[in-house]
Length: 244
Image 1 (tube, rainbow, N blue to C red):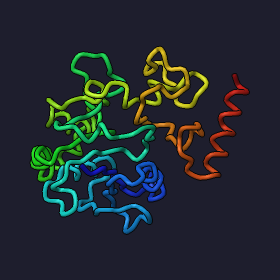
Image 2 (image 1 turned 120 degrees about the vertical axis):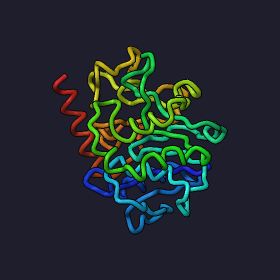
Image 3 (image 1 turned 90 degrees about the vertical axis):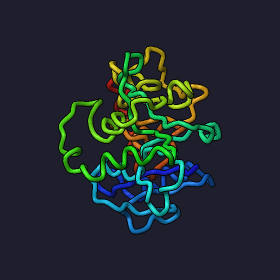
Image 4 (image 1 turned 180 degrees about the vertical axis):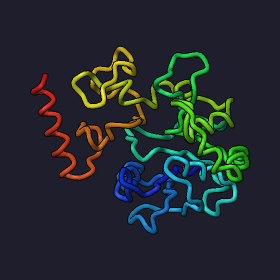
């Protein structure tokens, strides 16, 4: 199994962010699928299509990609924190997606694509449906959480296993399972009723879907991105506490 991130370079995500994630992976076999010419310290494979934003993730399903096409993949969003061992994640057999954190507990809850296990044998289904109809599919207007790449992937794999079912408590949401009212990104809608600001025991991966990004929190279990970034985050924390 190969761990893969995807970086389409832009204002929000740069090669430095890919380096930040891949440092967390240590010596695990991993690479970044990217349009960057080079990312020092990070093995890379090229994006072969000019699909914008999150749509670049569909290249994970290209069974003919010369570097990743034949591989089983564990895909991880770049704005993700690894907080424990990933050994258990190598034993999966079926395509696996997140249940959208905003819809947990709902019947027929839609999937999310922030963390995915993609077996090589399943890739052709999404690829054949997308590659020749990409412009039309990307132009479709669908409301969250049925939008974008995850909406399309979920349509192709309605039988996908869900992480929250096969590995309960191991992949969590910062907003749903950690943040409190005094922390950035707190959401009354997402809060699970027990989150108390600390990292739950047993969590292996923490997803940061949207704002804040992990490097904007200055939390002790989040790897530092840069000194300037950490100082800025701590100043915001201080001001938030003063406002009470």
